[in-house]
Length: 231
Image (cartoon, rainbow, N blue to C red):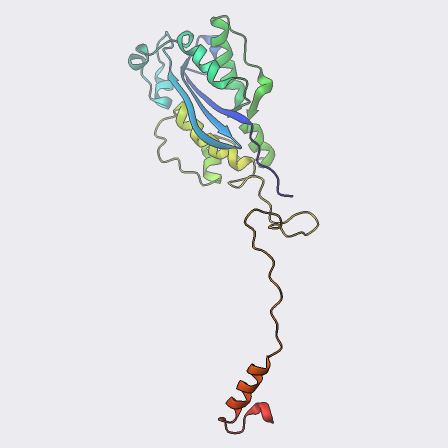
């Protein structure tokens, strides 16, 4: 039978930060989330820029383009945490290199006394890609190239834009743009059988000519010199 497309709500998630290690005082500067159901985005999303309450290193700004001046006017993580947690709910989290983003999110949650996000709820697309394409590059850019996903709008890294790209990559990693689609049923049955709107079976067309057709054929032969049908 054709496999059913899952209807599980999942959240594609990405963050931008001031650096690589929250233990060294680096903070989140942007959180992006995109809701997907059946591996397909629904259009529901969450995006917040975050005041990191510290300076912005030049090397980090070169990646995401977010300046300290711009972020100084944004809410702190403590001010957006409740809305963020409400959006993700208890859904599985689809993250590229999940340990990095969870490390930063849990550091921010710890600062405000909130429970950490369970790593077990994360679906790491890096791990999915490495299982499917052993030895190949597994960066988001490399996977977009592999699946011919347009990245022309990606001048800087941005959490929500990266979520949109990752959602397309995730769909491909889970089976492509028609998840669950199969050409035939097990046992060689007609895949269209029982499908709503399938064409009804048609009775075999008769091949023996009728009496009227035979008489018309004979009349035609009288107009032809030495017809091959009479040899």
